[in-house]
Structure formats: C-alpha cells, structure tokens
Image (cartoon, rainbow, N blue to C red; front, top):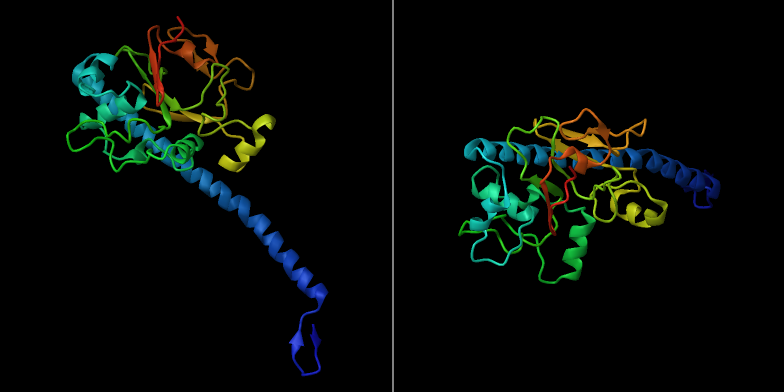
Length: 263
C-alpha cells in the first residue's frame, strides 16, 4: 500500500492482483460446493417424486387387483386425441386420487428436452395442473416431456426387484444417454451439451422398483461388467433393463409407448 501526495492510502498494482487472485481462489473453492448442493437437491426432488408415483402405482394395483394397462387409459382418454404415453398414465393416477395434481411431480426445469420443446414450440407451456376442471388430462400437460419411463402390463405378483419406473434416457447398454436423459453419462462427443445441461458431471439415473425403493445408478453395467439388475424370474445379472421386465411389458415415455420387453 502506498500514500499519495494528498495523504490518501491506495493499493499498489501487485496488491490488487493478489486480491483478485484470492477472490478467484475462493470462488474456485465455493463453486464446486454450490454445484454439488444443486445436484443433490435435484436428485432428492426426483427421487421423492418417483416414490410418490410408485406408491400411487401400487395403490392402484391393490384397488383394482389387475395390472395397470392401456385398457385403463382408454376410457380416461375417451373423446380426446391424446396419445397413450407416460403423461396419460400419470394423469390417470392423478384422476384416481393417488397423486397430487402438480406437473412438478414429473417435470424438471433443468430438463434439456423440456427446454427444447418450450423454446421451439410457441404453443407449448407448462400447465398449472396435470388434469383439468373436467377431470381429463390437461392439453398442455399431454405433450410436454416428463422425466420418467413408466412400465405397464406388469403382473401384480411381480418380484420386488422388478423395475417399474426410471428416469428417461436409459438404453439397453445400461447407460443413460443424451439428449433424452435428465442425467447423462459424460461423452466427449456431446461434452458441450452435457456441460450446458448438468455442469459436466458424470451422471446416471434413478430406477424405482416394485418394492417401492428408488435407487441411483451411474450406470447398470456394474464394476465387473455383469450388470446391476436381474433378469426377470432368473438369478442372472443383466445391464439391460428390458431383460429385468416380464414379457409383454409396455414402457411408456412422454413421446409414446413401446412393447419391446424381452422374454
């Protein structure tokens, strides 16, 4: 520090540079902590939503004593042009009074796919509720990306380890992929997108099981490459989530349904 001709104290250039470096060092220490707190908060929110949906799913099975199927949705979507997708099944569970009527239950404001739809479709918007005043699915909710893939046509006596629900983007290779996944594994090809969406962290996804548990996985490959799941009805490990499902299972996502469960 120096004293100028007027007797005032001022910092030298070296001192200013030292202060700037110190501030930069503090930011570099604080930023990872803040980032991790944000990631942890997001994961907690998603996991809690999945537990609510799993509970609603099981309550519906107990109430009807038959698997949740496309037939259940037909009457609910009657006289509408909405497709039978994950949104429709979630809306159905809301309509049956098993879930709160809040889109926050199954959407995330950091979801790249949701941001893309809202950006490129001027008519798209996040609705206030999942179902409308007439107890039908809200037209805005019908087409926006939801976070999960929901399985239907699963027997009510399914094993506890049967996957019912998982975060979007899970492939048969046991990894969550960009851009569909809310959480995705780092990929040098898509590194810039990953950085923009999720701070460049190596991420995976959640799976919810028939016993109501929700578990986080970076991937389903496992440390030994044999897989984290078990084939349906068999004590054989697999990384392919389809092999963990009973034959005839339908996977419903926001953009449609796929009946491709392996025997």
